[in-house]
Amino acid sequence: MIRILAVCPVPPDGTAWWRVVSPLGVMQQDWPGFAHVEISHEPDHVKLSNVDLLLLQRPMREGDRHMLKCAKRLCIPVVVDYDDDYTAIPAHNPRARQYMAPAMQELFKFFIREADVVTVSTPALKKKWSQLNKRVIVVPNGLDDRLFTPQPPVGKLRPRTVVWRGGDSHSDDLRAFAPALASAAQQVPTAMWHFVGNPAGELAHELPHGSIVEHPFADVTTYFEALGRIAPHVLVVPLADTWFNRCKSNIALLEGTWAGAVVVAPKWPGWACPGVLSYESPAHMDELLRRALSMRDAELKAMRDLAWGVVRERALASRSNLLRAAVFSELVRETKTKRFPRPDVADLGQALKGLQSDASGEATAGLLVEGATPPSAQLDGAQG
Image (tube, rainbow, N blue to C red; front, side, top):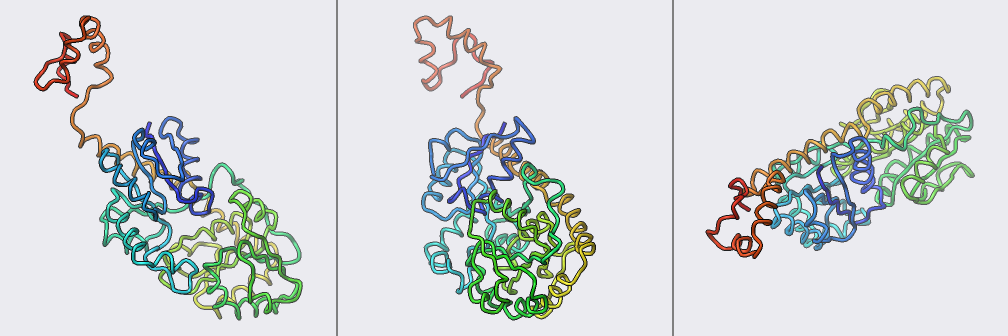
């Protein structure tokens, strides 16, 4: 069994869910005896001393740096996991001032450079960070096999329902696509628009009166419950064409497809999928969104079923866990080959015999003296 300590800066948030909490929970349930995982918020060298592998999810604190250094001293392999490009936060992003500070940038690069393996969610991140570490591995996000039903709820008959989901870091994306969203909304004024997470903001003035429903942030499982209850016909993903957005994973596509929606998303690598409407510009998104809102129920269901079939086959946590397990196993194996020889548990019986024949304890104490030999049993020549 591989003992894993996973340190997450905010264990309840969405990034920790997709990269650690959910997949490692699935792993422990699917493969009992393969791994035992403890998830911690605070760096803890005592917990670290009792594990085989350290997983640092989105490390960004001095305490995380200390943990990595402690792991290196103890010959414990370190996996660093990132799901966004924290070295290229756009200026308009609310977190830019914090993350792009020189000291923080030095920290991010330290973690990428010093990790034994860096796992990322997209090929774009691998391409960039392979300049700092030659062992960058793409482990895609996957839907949690335990919590999500094989046949998620399908869209309601009327009115047409559209969902946008995201945080304040996507406010500029919403603004960039506001004319396209407003145009599609005016074309189908009876449609209801649900904003899950961040509110509609300025876009509220552009959509038909009474068509907006806002849902505040909640924990991940409650979020999925709400998404299933909304049962959207369409989930729209307006993303400006920036490097930061190109590095983002397709979680919105997985969530929307699970909820029974046809997803309207950018025509980028990782997002193209049968049944997904892929746009190339805001004007193109307007066109596709109008098309989706005017489709008959049978057409929407057929498109969504195409995408859902691909997600179920290729994008479940159990599938991505095959890569995770391979990474963890290989790192632990490599680390063991670098250690000096140690007694095996098979030597325990002979060690006990030696102790029993050493009533005074002098021979046993002599094991600690340079050049001393073990008691008569000699532990089969093993040396600690």
